[in-house]
Amino acid sequence: MFDLTGRLAVVTGARRGIGLAMAEALAGAGADIVGVSAALEAEGSEVARRVEKLGRSFTARQVDLSDRGAVAALAEELAAGPPVDVLVNNAGTIRRAPAAEHGDTDWDHVLEVDLTAPFLLARELGRGMLERGSGKIIFTASLLSYQGGINVVSYAAAKSAVAGLTRALANEWAGRGVNVNAIAPGYIATDNTQALRDQPERNQAILDRIPAGRWGRAEDLAGATVFLASDAASYVHGTVLAVDGGWLGR
Image (cartoon, rainbow, N blue to C red; front, side, top):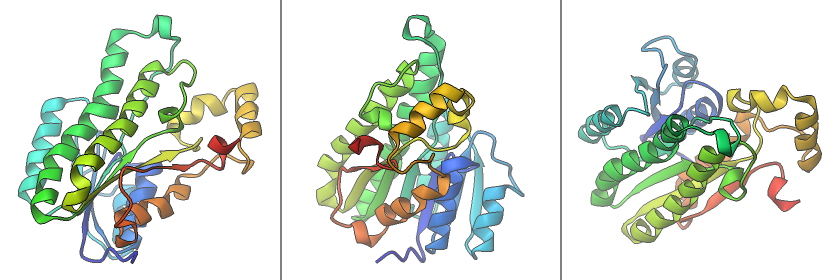
């Protein structure tokens, strides 16, 4: 049920961190990968090396997901190519500042990358999935899809909206063979959380709240990604699956 042999997966934000781990996991299950990232090398990237080592093909696409025209061009290119079986809308960005000091430019940038680009890709590639009667779309949500966070107002707004978008698309597409779900990572040790880990008191407060007693690793998202991309999740629709070390249960 977890075999993805012969399927094509598009993973945004695939250059490093969670996206890299997701791409590697999908390749390990048999999928060929199209990796998308703003700074992704055309050749010789770490994600390409890992995917190809597993015997799967890797195609790199360097795209600034804050540029709506570039996202539209990517969607058009992908829609015209081999059928995309799995779309993992993982790429994201964050801006940290008190809400009263959070500028319009940062707000627009975060919403464009974290919400609008994922919707556009889901809409455009989703059309082909609907025509074929099959497909898997996975969004990367967040614990802040449930909570408000501190000093990350645009990120919290975007990730809350991603949870709603997941449910809205599932309501429309579940009956037509397309599974739309999301993964909500907990506190994962990536570049996006480096600022928190660099603050001793904040870092300890976070650890004290996590029942598992540690920060998550990008690889902790691998199993959930393969599950939601596979036939094992054929009756899973509109779910936001938390992979958080127990954070939300405390």
